[in-house]
Length: 98
Image 1 (tube, helix red, strand yellow):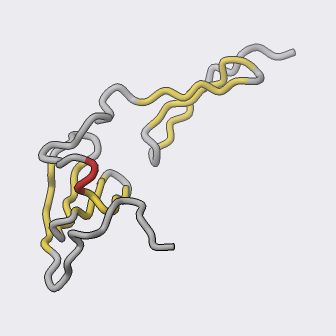
Image 2: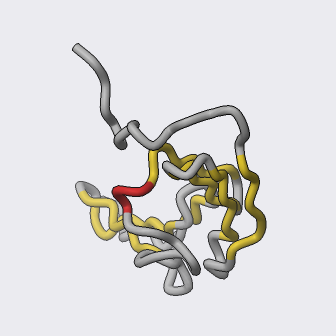
């Protein structure tokens, strides 16, 4: 038998720390600075149609045809881009037609 592995692994993509507590369990811990509630200026979840995380950016498309980008580390809004000639007001998150 070997002792506990004392190495911490950081996943930059998921912003999480991981370590082996024993041979059968891996503990995953979110970083303390991670914004897990809301980003600044964010609407209710039902207002958003799609989201995407790219490196340190969180991008969301809302029903008002606006793409908004936030910095994941700070939670601050970085930019907004209004899509023209497109009506997304009737779409719902994760919705599809049978």
